[in-house]
Length: 264
Ligand code: DGL
Image (cartoon, rainbow, N blue to C red; front, side, top):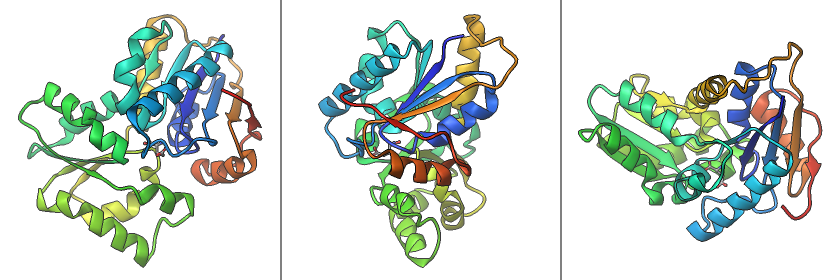
């Protein structure tokens, strides 16, 4: 009956939460967005690790039974370091996406796009190589994508130009599969598809992450058995009004107002 915890550096993790709400409708879910300290994508490894531990401790205080790390930067930079230090299951977004990409690629050329932190960590590359050493990975950081999405710029000429510029190396490398390795990128999917061409598979890990969470909970007999709909709660470390507005565009509907917490 305990809730599932989800956290992200801010609002982007809602793309993952949305899929959890859909696939696990009876679960109570607590979402925490670290809006006071976002973005994580440009911060040092040490800082991302420290923030992540604090966020996990906050969720543990809410008595969660599993934590979904709905942030690519945290999943790639901090999770490999900290995951064995907690008893609660920690589910990141990298492995489910990697599995799907390795399965999808026909020509064994995979592109990865994400924040600078995610790309510099090389976690995606390492995991892909572990699964299939023959796959050639081209990874590119796209730091302007997050602010574009947060400003609501998800289409139009300027966006197409920016996307074209960033994705040039992926086109040159002739990848047939691209991992959208950042929470915000699914909102740019139509433009990315337009630039890369419809034959290129775009992998957005949210669906696979939710399947993984369900599998773990069911394997441990920890699924919530109650038949009514789960309760969703939202916490942020700053600016709940901004979060509430953004949540609407990420989820396509209003959510219960986020509560501001002090000192996670
Ligand atoms: N949530 C982050 C990620 O998926 C993007 C925003 C940030 O840089 O904090 O990498």
